[in-house]
Image (spheres, rainbow, N blue to C red):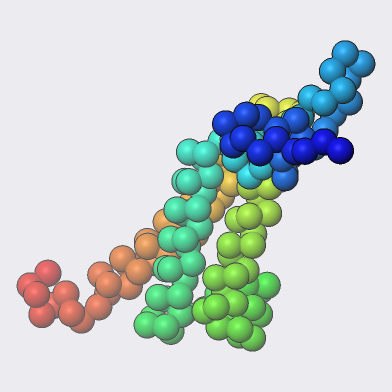
Amino acid sequence: MTMANSDPRMPDDRPSRGMRVRRHALDQSAAEPLPAFRSLPPMRYPFLYAGFVIVSSMDLTLTWLVLQHQDGYEVNPIAASVIDHWGLPGAIAFKFSLMLFVIIICEIIGRKRDRTARRLARWSVGVSAFPPVYTMTLVALHLLDSPLLGLIGM
């Protein structure tokens, strides 16, 4: 009868929990850790994704402000339906699920075609930047026509 290694300073021959044993012809007990969250490859275009998230969040924020305070309406019929049925929480879930979808598509395409995925990520930032710029322009024009400007001397 053999006893397991009881000295804590001595390494144990068995693979620890979370390790899988890979059998090689020369070494029968080589242990290799399972892939962990930290071992995932880094994101390919993090700065483009950050810009994409920022302009998409600005779009969501400005849309909600216009809907609540300016008596505006949502131009996108799908987003308008989501807002009508689920309000702000639905709009947030819808917008962030679309962002996540685009980022995942860019990551998948980037594994095979880096230029195409980088171009898609850039276009996603540019296309997503259009609605906030347009909304800010409309709000600025609305404020210029406002009677409040007469009160402050403009």
